[in-house]
Image 1 (tube, rainbow, N blue to C red):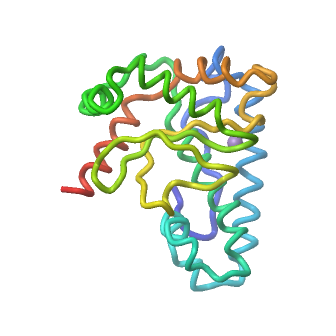
Image 2 (image 1 turned 90 degrees about the vertical axis):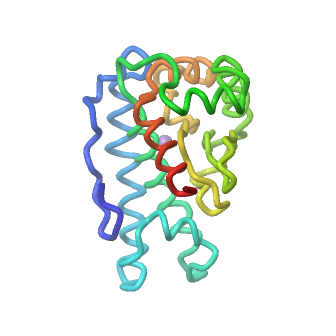
Length: 211
Ligand code: MN3
């Protein structure tokens, strides 16, 4: 994973068709090779004559985006967010996967949401509520509490002092070829390909920050 300028489009950790029948190969190919590539190219262009920012890791630029020079703030928010959010999203998918959370995360989900079914309900509701393009997230706040939040466009939760654990891209380009306009069907299919091993690892990394 390269976190500094110049950013490169690292390959998906699985084949384009690995997520079939839940997400089709063509969607994955376009999503990774075209959409993510465009964010990477635009981010590199934005940073090309800013040597100081070239030494700042992507996550840090996004966490402190309000401190960035005004002339590039919006571009880094959009394109840097586009790179961060897509990498995060793609890395948490696999097929086949365990169909429910594992490890300590499973216990925390039960604690904060009641049970996994209730979590699914609340997460689905949040993902459906995103007007236009954006993401739904499971995050940990500074007190270690789990929360479901949404972000618009390519905004990330990092600037709100939230630690991402899981995200779902609900831009239409993520599902339109297969699921057409029916976001609810896409969300349902996405629940079948969440790599809970990696999600649990994200969760444990967040928890370690507070210890
Ligand atoms: Mn996308």
